[in-house]
Image 1 (cartoon, rainbow, N blue to C red):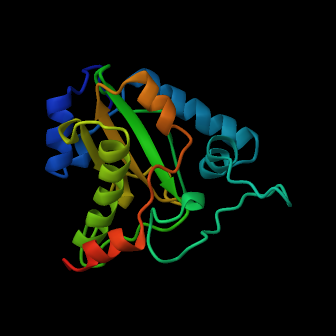
Image 2: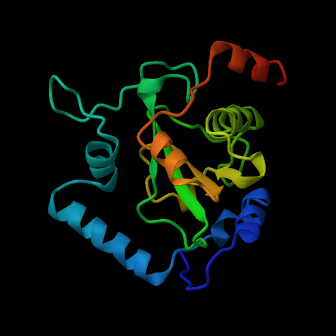
Length: 202
């Protein structure tokens, strides 16, 4: 991945996501160095990056065994069960301008790629499901203007953590109170009615 000290402004971030040109996102050198140091720390503790994230950031650990638990409660669809999703900050964000908050929504379910896509993109239906979750959480629940929210899922070749599915959410001008409300939560998961409405379109 390239590094650059030039901040990615909102209009450019929006353009990159809309064009699906995700390989044009980058970190600055300081954040890149921090990420490399973090990987070394994980290695020294005999943990993979995903194990560290699950245990320390997502806290998906069985209360009875103390072991990592990423078994989903439902296999129906992503972002439909509160126990299967959690929103946290990106500890190593891309080099966005200061008005952009970079969050990550993790899910215990696999976000499957379109088998017909050479780059591992999402199917239109999966994209619609995720978009509904993002809108329901950030627009309808938190009251953020739709034009200030974009999301993406990196192609497999660009993902630094392949073992656990996640999406990135970028928000312009997020208020501190709203950030505190959403952090550590599953967001507003989808209902059967939400899914039925989406499925009728495909």
